[in-house]
Structures are given as structure tokens and as C-alpha cells.
Length: 415
Image 1 (tube, rainbow, N blue to C red):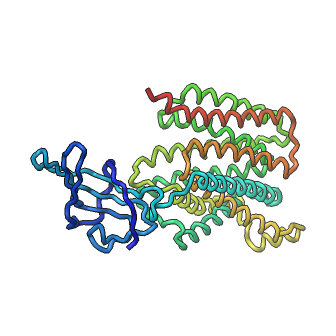
Image 2: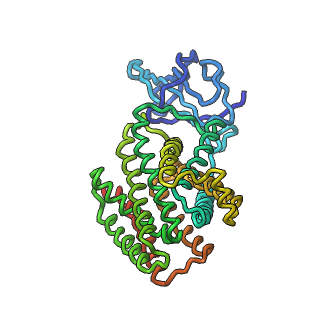
Image 3: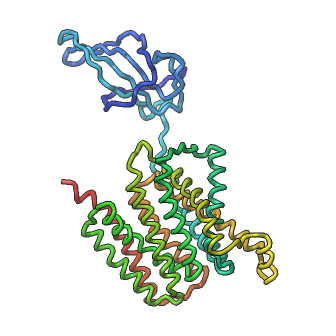
């Protein structure tokens, strides 16, 4: 059996021991400087490894063991032999031969940096491919349904290969997820309508208004009162979007209105998810919640797309497009790539959210918007004036200030 050195120190109560019966180890004695004598009797143990017996020494400790917990009975002989149980945690000493190897801060930073890079890259490619498709294939609802369909296929593969555990859904959970999926569906349809009508950079400038809708909806439906700094940060956001809108070369009311409406629906989804998902025992993890919303949205959007636009993805219709000189093969390839990037960047976003705080994720999302705007302007060679640039920059600065103000909120409440 491989050895491991353990250090014992007092700890807070820990989860229930898995060994159901106390071990029969002989008590240990330890002499204190004050000549008080305590007897240490191991009454139960829990080792995160393979436990072949109920005694501590028969528990096979490997290098994969992260920590072990030992409950000790301390008997004070000087005070008449009264005994009391104390929860003590045994952890591997740093540098021990078989101690747990924790990832360093540098490795974690590199991992997060790589995930943020993948998130941004997938988002850039989605916006480029999606815009190229919507330029020649002017059916945003059908494209949205197709993208949800691509996401559904990826989710089924994820569950089938056990990359993520399959969720067990109750009726009450489904009733909560359904309105969120409806808002999710509407938000993505409206975003695609906007991307088809105006420049990518302008759509994302308008979507910088999301914090404004978050504050308004949280105040109306959750009763949250924003701080002075949060309200102040909304001023440059609203002013910057207004300035950029007045000077936008590709401006039209359909694109502007649909982008604004997508802000409303997307933030309604976020606010109501806070309102409804209050039972932590029934709450789903972020990845499964997003996966279920995607699959439900696919089922909801398909009939909506057929009703609004007809069946525009049939072989006969694609053949008619080919007869008009459109490269259908290239269209299908870019549509599939857009669908893959659409689901993947959101999946990576939820994975990052599980690793960092919501405020850090919000700052990263703001940086993502900057990267998407700059990359789309360069790729599509979008004409942009100085005043328009100032408006976009002002709105994005406001989003940064909003994130900072949200970080300050708990500090203001502390004494």
C-alpha cells in the first residue's frame, strides 16, 4: 500500500461519512504540553478513493485521493473521562509523495484564457457566416430554426457520449423552462431579423443596451432597486447607442426595432429565470438548462418559420435557388457552420460561467462585443464615421461601467 502523510486540524462539519460502521482501531494517545492527556479514537472515516474495508488502514489511498476526513473522539482524562466528538479533517500535506496535485493559478489562467479565446472566435465566425447567409437567404425564422436544429443534434451527441449527464426533468421544471424557451426563441429570431437588415456592428451596438433592459425589468418584476452607480452607468449606454443610431449608414427601422426587441426578450428570459428558478434542489445546471431551452426552442420555432415563411429548406426550393445562379452548396456549408458556431459559442459561454463569477463573465461578454464589432467592420469593410465610432465606444464604455457598478454593489451593503 502506498503511504501518504496527513496533517490533522480542526475543521467545520463535513458531509455524512460513507463508512456506515465505526472502525475497530485501537485508541491513540497524545501528550499535550499542559500535561493534559487526550485519547484519539478513530470512530469513522471517509476517504475519497476505493475503500475495501471499514478500517482506515485498509482504505486504498492513491494519488487521485484529494482529501480524507476523519472523525476523532477526544477524551479528556483530567476532567473525569468525559469525551466529546470533534470533526477533524485530514488533508494531504503539500509536497508529500502521494498528495493531491492541484492545478496552479497559472494553468487555470491559461485554461480560462483559452476558453475565452474560443468563445470570441466562435462568436466572430457565427456572425460572419450568419450575415453571409442572411444576405442571400432572407428567411431569418427558417435560419433560426435550422440553428436550433444544429444545436439539438450537438446536445443529443453530448448526452449520448456522456460528456455531460442527462437531466431528469419533472413537470414543474418543464413548466418553468417553457416560458424561458419562448423568450429564447423570440430573442434569436429578432436578432437574425436585425442581422439581415443592418450591419453586424450596428446590431451589436444596439445590443449593448441589454443592461438598461435588465435594470428596468429587475426593478419591475423582482423589486430590485439599482444603486446610484448602476443607474449612472446607463447614461453613456443610452447616449452612445442613440449617437451611433443617428449616424449609422445602414440604419433602418426594422433592423433597429428588432434588435431592441431582442434585448427585451433576452433580458426577460434572464430576469424570469431568476424569478422562477428559486428552488435550488430542483434547479438545473447551466449547461442542461441551456440545452433544454435549445431543444424546446427548436420544436417551437419550426412551425413558426413554416407559418411565416413557408417551407424554404426543401430540396425543390434549393434547386430553384440554384437555377437563379446561387451557389447552393456554399450556402448550405456556411449555414451548417453558422449553426455549429451558434450553439458552440453559447455552450462555451455557459462553461465559462461555471468557472468565474457572473460579473467577470459580464465583463468578458462586453469584451466579446467589442471584438465582434471590430472584426465585422474589418471583414465586411463597413463604412463608419467618426461620430458613429464615438457613439459605439461610448456605449461600450457604459457597459464596462455597468459591470464595475455591479461589482461595487455588495461592497456598499457591507458595514
